[in-house]
Amino acid sequence: MKALITATGLGKKFGDVYVIKDFNLVLHEKEIVVIMGQSGIGKSTLLNILGKLEPYDEGEIDYDESVFEGIGVPFPFVFQEMDTLLPWKTVKQNISLVNPKASDDLLKELIENVGLTDHQNKFPHELSGGMKQRVGIARALICASKVLLMDEPFGSLDKEMRLKLQDFLLKIQDKYELSIIFVTHDEEEAKRIGHRILTIK
Image (tube, rainbow, N blue to C red):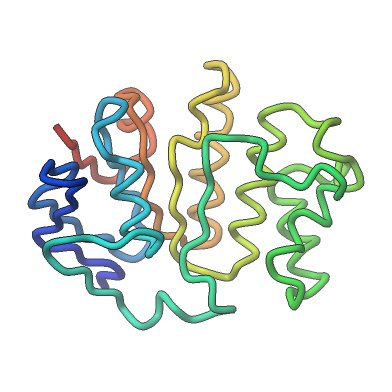
């Protein structure tokens, strides 16, 4: 199976203090790798580095060229915060905003697959927390990337909604053959969705 992202000996320092030291990761095609660890341990920083949002100090990261195919947004993120949607735009408009060139058929398919067909003309304040996260996932998928980075995306939801969205994510991952790096501090969640689990201590 082809490796899409390979990180070797990765290190990141703030001043003289290491937040990440000697970290190794391989993300293969169609794989969910979960990065687990307690809050404040550096998981989000690591995800930002892998997603090219932050520089690193040591080691190297190799990306397969196929990661950068699509519209030029190789690493769409889904965050825990649900206030990243534009409040003056509808569900449909929020999803299409990041890729105006996406076909109407793709937009329709994504809205249907995240279960928001009946809510596509609603505004963010009219949505539940779970619906907002599904909008965020659809917005990431429309970027046409095969790699998705998720930073504790279900952390602020109640247990019932978390379980529903975990199941939903597994279905979407299978349907679109995604490779996902998923950050969480919840061991139960990690075991439920991850093909492999990497723990930061």
